[in-house]
Amino acid sequence: MEVGKMTVSINKAINAQEVAVKEKHARTCILGTHHEKGAHTFWSVVNRLPLSSNAVLCWKFCHVFHKLLRDGHPNVLKDSVRYKNELSDMSRMWGHLSEGYGQLCSIYLKLLRTKMEFHTKNPRFPGNLQMSDRQLDETGENDVNNFFQLTVEMFDYLECELNLFQTVFSSLDMSRSVSVTAAGQCRLAPLIQVILDCSHLYDYTVKLLFKLHSCKYKFIYSFLS
Image: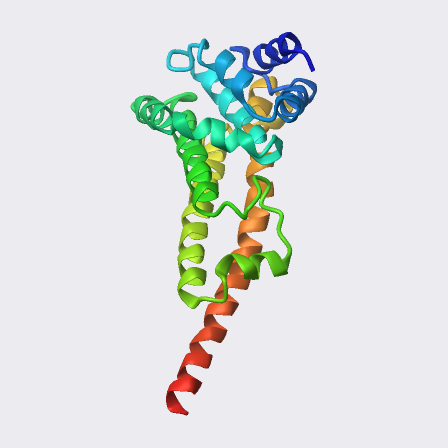
């Protein structure tokens, strides 16, 4: 894929119009990261966008970046970690706005940083969080302390996801069918990624809690023996 084509798609996906990101543009961005084995082009384009002065633009950046972290090349995470502090600064800045997309951007940016930190600490988890039971077991290395720490991190991760979900719905006018409007779809579209993340996180936390429960009884049994 040509860099020029990916650049065009990034600019088309992340624009200031209050409409949902078009899937064809997001898909081209995802494929572009696999083609170049990273997110160099993505960040070179994004760094020229006024994300700190246009909330809708920032919101759509968050949506596209979330997609890249989930379905892009694994090196997207490595190429993006260096921007964590910038995302945190932007999150604090947008957090001062109580109306419109300000709070939404602030919470979404916090979620993206949390996602990056989780995957950095737990590199066995792919961006889309899809793992087999065996792979989940291997991440804990059969150590109850590792399982406990992983559970805590997953709860923090899940809390950020649910916080965004709640904030988006709280920002909508529930007295009318906002889901059919362009503005409503712009706010709701990223929640697809949130639902996909949450479904795995909920499943894994339940399994890990059962493991911790089992380990507790094994410890008591060995102690009494």
